[in-house]
Length: 593
Image: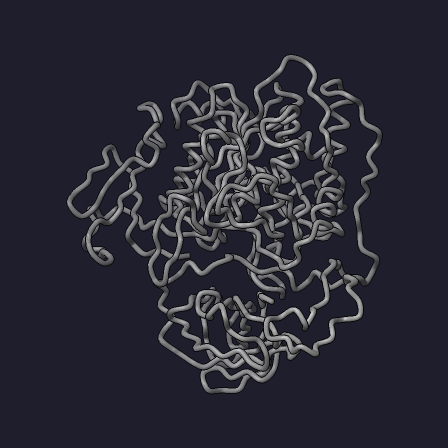
């Protein structure tokens, strides 16, 4: 969480600018009767450097912060088999049966993420940006709801891309990029949600896909003390529900492979515990005639499972929701990528689960357009596969239901059996895909070929086999956030030489990036501290015997707090701050042959 102090959020009758601060309404489209949203203002510093508290225009303004963005992380295994496995696990249908009855406009899915809308001629398609995350979310939704491509016959949705995460980091500076970024301010997320709702037609079915989140320690549980930036997000989601939209949020990813330190779901997914606004609340707070959203929870939280229907290892403790979806190494092909768009990579995390749940809700709503939003959720749950585990949290004070994993085939079959689509489907075989006792989920990887590197000797002999082998899925969980967003954190100025011994089989490769996790034994609570060296290592760093870099905690960015230099790693022969330590763990070592 980064709070530089250059963006403030306030609430009042007017937004007054001066020569040092620009002031704009956060929700400029809000009508006068919308008492809750029209009063939010955003103030941005126009002066040199960073402002002091004394330079703020009013004392009751609150600093806006940048939160972690993507709730899925890239994995190195990019194979067509992974796409096929994902589509099989989610029980995708190609083609989708056609809806019966009068033709309805497609369901709009607003992907509030890192991607912008494409050119006018490609309206309704997955967007693109600097980060591949937003496009990846859109591609999953498009593949599951429009098997033949956006705008084609049988397509049930159109995608509206909204940049809620538009900040990029360059050195020590953070700037807003019109093409989207990697993390975002709360106020920008709130504005993107509001713009998506305001641009939707009065009678258009709208789903908000919120594949981002922040740890609840920064705020969310105590509604009476949210702070204005987070309250803006909360209130605009309430407004969306009053307007009849569904909000589907990723439950979050915890950090590290040990028992997760984060407790409870991330937000906004944690607001599934809160009810949707009543008719009276919609009238009083937003000037609407009543609630079109009906009853049910404020948001629908989505939890990720692996190919064996086990919850992802980075699921926060207490963060299992009632709806789950495949979310391990998810990738779908990109048949029409825009120019300069990052190539798709397999992603693991609850972002992907949210995209699948949004797809399921959109298909249900396309077949049954008159369903109120809360019944759309119930249809998705009813058709899901019971995993035999009770959810950790849900709406209301009653005991939660068992977790159900989304099955598109089961869901569509029920709709067609009830006369909402044709043709009828045969039964779907869809029991929980449990692993044998004592086993671990695995995935297919290719063996390292030591002869592919640019410095391979002429006499090098390639491996005798090119067969893929199974590797444990356990290490392939890069924790969140996926990039350092805290350039101004006060972490001291300690520097030391990090000397990491490398696998000799990698001597012919160039290293593009390195992510490290440190476990500090003197930290009061158990947890890994994340160090991202991707922007610190030269792209032509040679492979071989060792990897050397200056480790500057003040400049690199560390997720967590260093309490000592007595650390516990997972490889040997490490020197940090001049002291030998026992183990270091490389989370990812990206290789370029």
